[in-house]
Amino acid sequence: MIIRTLALGLASGLLATGAHAQTASQKNDYARPETWVCWPGKAGDACAVDMTTTVIKADGSSSVERFRSDPKAPVDCFYVYPTVSNDKGVVSDMTAGPEELNVVRAQLARLGSKCRIYAPLYRQFTLTALRAASAGTPIAGSMDPAVRQVGYNDVVDAWNHYLAHENKGRGVVLVGHSQGSGVLTRMIAAEIDGKPVQKQLISAILMGTSLGVDKGKDTGTFKSIPTCKSPSQTGCVIAYATFRDNIPPPANSRFGRVQNPAMEAVCTNPAALGGGQGELKAYLSNTAAQIADSAAAGPTWVKGKANPTTPFVAVPGLLTGACVSKNGFNYLEARVNADPADPRTDTIAGDVVGPNGQVAADWGLHLIDANIAMGNLVDVVAQESKAWLAKK
Image (cartoon, rainbow, N blue to C red; front, side):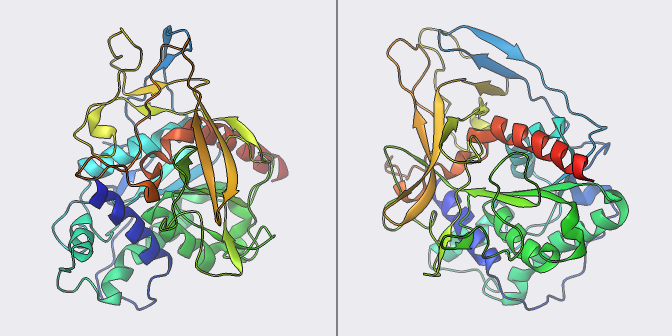
């Protein structure tokens, strides 16, 4: 698992700052449905899945929450997934495997209650190549700048196809995690920031990344797209990386800070955009297959009770979050509100754990950046979309 997560972070950095060399690779035809993981009405749409959730209250009682997507949602979401491909080459193929299907279910599909969802397949730099690079035995061709450009080019092509054929002046929320956030950061800076299409940007949600702003300001990497300060604000960006309150980022962490000394990393709390602490409305995966590709089973949610069988579990009131600045890092600090009278588990999976069973503190809760605030993000998308439509 630790190598998987190392790959996520490496890919995020590589693709956020990647070379601008063009590749000779044949372009994908994004008019073909099979080049999309999620596309409204597509046969086999990976976002048209069971999102049923068991809501477990502080007294141990529970209820079942059904989910409905809204195919007539008035706005769109465009998503770029993190490093998940186990394909054997340097870049992935264009076939959605279990990795892509699982990640859109965990990180994206729930937003379908507020927006039409578009998620392209793209030829990302694979876990296979990144594992080899981290072991000091890179695969031949993996250091070629043109190869590292392929995935970015794909996402830009998919975005342009979406704009030309589907958008029709609609507002759009951009969503990404880790490598996906890195790709979107590049694309926003090059294709949206200061361009006519910026007027259609409702917001950008960039999770598991370190987005730089000039110290004391709300812009930096993006010149005219500020950080979001309220759910009624539009044309802004939400970015954060999550750590436990009792395991803050150590000095070697790659999240929560940027290399440019004139800048600092953005932390936007989805539970309290204006600042301060808020309840994190988590939707946590309830199957081993969804818990960061881990072979380990999930926790026992309520002591003395059998686990629910729904794909997701919600634990209202158990988790709170606040953006903090500590030891040179800006990050979303998540707290488990342990209470002896509360029979629910205090063990929330999401840490990166090495082969020796030791938590890799420098990665924080990278594996559940999306899950831990998913309910808040759904609420924010709903409120920002309403505000954008009112201004249209």
